[in-house]
Length: 298
Image (cartoon, rainbow, N blue to C red):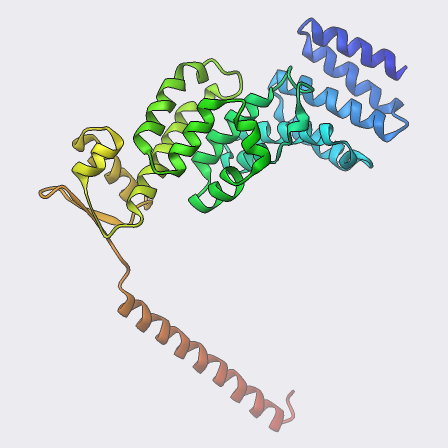
């Protein structure tokens, strides 16, 4: 009976009737007698739910599969579940969570999940999400020095070069390569709704990282590094300052960006006062307790 429902689900899925296929796969749940049957059912439901865009179902059945005994012993299945989890996070615009899942996918995935996501897709999605969400240290640790994910990036040379350019602070060539990829990404089934947000986050992170080591930066040189007009760059930086991403101020006359460092002297006084108040409060509490003990109220 389980195999019959499963075959019916495969048939309806091949015809594109994913809603009916989902019902057939869910019916097999009552006839699963081994952990392998349960894992097969969960994976089938995950696939059709991704096609339907029902990521709540995807998340639920990924969790169910991961909690099933013997799930961790199958490297291919583990890779498939990580891809499904990553796509769920991507759909929710949780780019950091998506990036962490994508970079953990092993090359054992192969073509086993090609109807949903190929290995080169995983490399592209992981690279873009990592650039948008990871800081420099995390990008270096999880992507650049990650030999497993680096081998996947070899399958998508454009994504590999974008990551290397960004990590090497070659921002103009990195952003130019991203713009070259944009038409293809806008046709991507999973990435299309997130392209503008990802690109904006990557550009903002590049501007922040460029400025972070300096006390002052010439906006003309910075504009040259990013291959944009000075006025356009000034507006972008002003928006980042307003959002709190860059602690700085702009000298529009001299076209210089100055870092705004915290007043260490004032911060030290504030910390000292707070410590003194805490000490006084604790001392009063101890004296009160001693008086209560002396009066036999404790």
